Structures are given as structure tokens and as C-alpha cells.
Length: 435
Image (cartoon, rainbow, N blue to C red; front, side, top):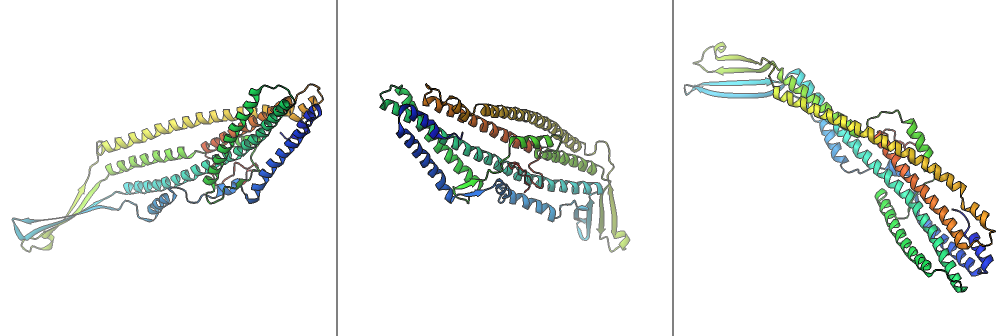
């Protein structure tokens, strides 16, 4: 990857006496270097920790906070008195013989306790939804930063490939100038590849600008991601081994568990309502020719006698709803278990594939091939450029594997509930810094 382009062209010069090619190549390198350095003057570096730490203005967050505050600060408990009923009627159409009745119904103690637990469960539901919003935003930022990091590598690959294509084009042009007869279709193909490469670079730079706007909308397009401590596959593997036995429920499982608890509480509430003994207490006044107070006032009491069929339909429905949620929980757990197994297997494959590519790169470094074949009398400069292109493709294959491994790694952590743990860990940092 780092082989000097001047060394390639020098072999060509020694054989063909084309000193102008060396000058052209140096000019290309100089211009590309200037283009790469000038933008850095206005660039500002931002770290992955900074991006992950700033989770302000999350969509829906304020509404969920308002709902949770309402449940916490406004009385939600079931009252002791269920309802109060007042009735009046005349006796024999004589208004001086009016009757008045006040009836009060009550909620029993078990029903009130069940309702309190339902309120607590609802508060936890709002808190969990808030955590889900935060985790979803973290996951989104992780994935965007991974794209940003490896997108920069892809741009560097395109720039290096552009140099090789320009060198190859120059070689063909010099061969034509020296009355050699290279295949003209190759020269046309190089022009086509250069145009396509220019379009690819344009599209990739637009994608990068979009990612920067998503991660730091208030920043300029010259923002640069700090990759000095980017996580390695070895560190990813270490983290996955350390967390292999951690059975922390992810947010989907936690939410489903809350649904099961909610149905269980509804079942308990229906049971408590069916076992209510005291139905009502009533006080009655009947004006009857100014009788003494003991004869004009009466006290009444209503009692319920629970049976096996009392509130049976509501109880059965609540129990069936709970069983449905437990069924969904079993399916969800199996789905997550299978997905984790597949992701872990995929990561293992990518890790070993990365090792293989690294070994191939080490054994077939362009510098080594260049030293081995530079004194070969009939080695054409195009062959040397092909060697460099082969090394460049190997490097590209490696970082594409690393990108896939990194995305798989983040997805595994999200499924295991690791992204939402506090204090949070920056899983794109090789030292696993806390934020």
C-alpha cells in the first residue's frame, strides 16, 4: 500500500528512457497531496465518544417524560369509595313525606393494592420506552460512525486506484508515442474506469456529508472522525468472550415481560373484584308525620356472596391474555437466541477470514514482490502496476471484512442488552472508554 510510485516509474524510465513519465507521476502525487492537505486546515476532529455522549432532543423523549411524570405525581390509586349514589322519591305523592337515600360503594383492600401495582407497572413501561428510544439512537449512531470510518477508507482506496489508472494510462500513451502498439481498447477502458471512479467518489463524498449532517447537524461538512483509537477485531473478540455468559435481557424481552406482568395484575384485579364482600352501605331518611328520629332514619348494608362463577368471564379473559403474552415471550426468546447464535457464528467466520487476508497481505506485500522482480529484464511496468493493484485490492477486502465484523459486533451487543447498560461503554474505542 505504501510503495513509492516513483520506484515503479523508475523501472520504466530505465528501460524506455522516458524521464517525462517520472515528472508527470511526481506532479500527480504532489497535486493529490496538496488536495488532501488543504481541506484539513478548516477541519475539526470529533471523537466517537463525543457523538455517543450527546443524546439531547431524542424524538418522543419529552412526551414519554410527561407521561411518566403524570403517573408519578398525580394520584393514580384506586379510592376506598368506589361511588356514591343519592336517590329521592315521594310517598303517596305527598311532598311532606319525601324519602331520601344515600348509598356508598367501596373497593376492597386487595383490589386497591392490585391497582397500585398496575400504576407502578405503567411507570416502568414509560421508563422502558425511554430506554428504548435512547438505545435506538445509540445503535443508529454506532452504525453511522462505522459507515463513516470505513467510507473514509473506501475514499482512500478510490484515490489510490485513481493514481494507478492514471499511471497505466500514461504508460499506454508513452508506448504509443514510442511507436509501440498496445491494445487501444485497453486505453479506452482506462478512460471509462476513470470516469466511473470519479462518479463513485462523488457519490461516496455525498454519503459522507449526509452522515456528518445526521451525527452533527450543527457542524460544518469539514468535520473529521477521530479514528486514532478505533476498535480492532481482537478487542471485539475479547468483549464478546467476556460477555458470553451475561444473560442480560434486551429491551424487547424486558418490554414483553412488562406486558406479562400487566396481564397478571389485571387477572389479580379481576379476582379481587370477584371476592368483594361489602357491596354498599346506605342511609335512608323517610319523613313520615314527624315520627321520632329512630323511625325516620334507617341504615342498610349490602353484601356480595362470591361463587365460582362470580366475574368468571372477565377472569378467564384476563388469564387467556396473560397466556398469550407468555407465548409471545417464548417465541421472542427463541428468536433472539437463534439470532445471537447466527451473529456469533458470522463474527467468528469474519474474524478468521480477516486473519487469512492479513497473512496473505504479509506474504505478498507489494514491496516484496517489487524487490523480487525489479531486476527481471522483461518485466513490464504494467505488471508492476498490476502488483500494486493486487495489494490494494487485498487491503480493500480486509477493511470490508472488518466493517462487517464491526457491525455484527454492535448488533450482538444490542441483542444482549449491553448498549443500554450504565455507565455506558464506547464500543468503538479500542480501550473501551466509559462515557
